[in-house]
Every structure is written in structure tokens, then in C-alpha cells.
Image 1 (cartoon, rainbow, N blue to C red):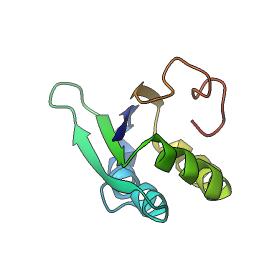
Image 2: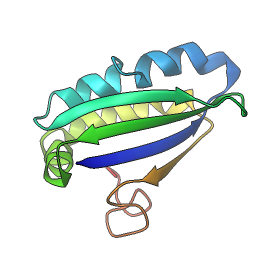
Image 3: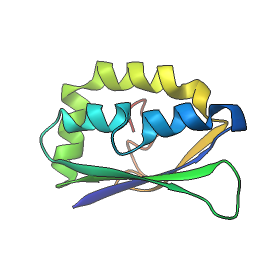
Length: 110
């Protein structure tokens, strides 16, 4: 299994929209589910830091994640651009690309 964990800081005025887009039935999960091997998304809210969230995306294996990136690249980039205004900051905390080649710092679809 491949797990990708992202941390987001969300401004107070965007919380409801963020939760709709990033939640387990949100637009990101819908996009991910269009690719074979997606196993689910979870959304967690911080109890100690207001506006901080974690998402955990699960894929059957790394090949499933890579296939999504290839087969749905344009839709991924479009949704990424559309949802950019919902967060103040985002960081990938865990995943196969963190700190290595293909990481978000070096790849538009990371």
C-alpha cells in the first residue's frame, strides 16, 4: 500500500469549502477514485491548531499512484489550481516522493 499524507493550513473563511473539496467524498477523492487502485481518503482536523488539517490518501501500490498521475494529469492540475485558494500553506509529510526525485518541489504533479 502507498500512503500519501498532506498537511494544510486553512483560513477560517475557507474551512467549509476546504472540507467539501478535501474530504473523503470530496472532489479530490472523486478524482482519485477514477483511477484503479485508489483505496480512500481521510480528513483529520487538528485539535490543537485551528485551521490545520491532514489528509491521508491510500492507494493499492505506488504503481496505482503513478498511473493516476499519468492518466489524469490534466484533471489533477486543474483541480490543484482551482483549490489553491482554499489554503494558506500545504506540505506533503509522507509519501513515496517526499524529499526525492519527483517530489512536489521538482514535479508539478507530486
